[in-house]
Image 1 (cartoon, helix red, strand yellow):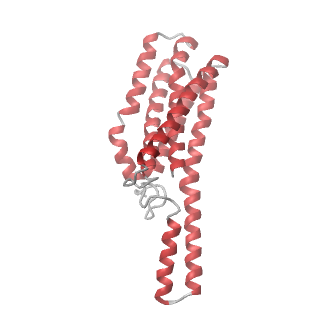
Image 2 (cartoon, rainbow, N blue to C red):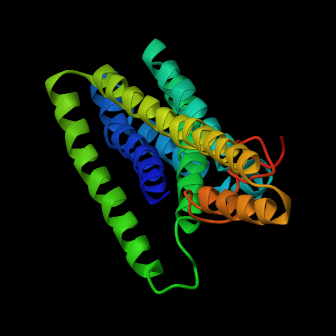
Length: 239
């Protein structure tokens, strides 16, 4: 789960940083809009990043990290497609607002998932958090540098192309970790339970089967995780 959390947070932050670093150049240099347009676009983008934070936690608690993470990916894709299609100033406004909303959903989901990757009562919490922040911020710094190179060597659209690849990596990580791996664990648990019930009988069979089921379920750390709760469908508690 630590790898999943870091991957989700890194992809979400990387896309935002790469686009935010070069959108000012795309507005003023590529399209000859005024400097005050840049400040207004960035202002709207930053507001979209943080204002939804008042409600994102409640959404994650209700629908799970997978659904909210997927919403973040969809918002990223909408914003990128809009800015690929048109470079009018109002498109920059709307597109960067979508990018801000997508960052909030994706990064918040990664943060919640990180807390589920270790026991909050243990002493490794600060170590886990520091490693998470180091990887996320380090990759973001590298991404900002790369986005400048892409813009200088090619153009603004190439930055959008490369960030769209990162969004699909984020989407693949969500689907792989929370669907495929979880289904395989459930299938393995059912197979083990059936084989035990066929081999043994009585109360010994029931207790031993329960212990094996519990051990198999512990492959994913964290007992109850929003979006991976054993009582839901793997995508949240609202299903």
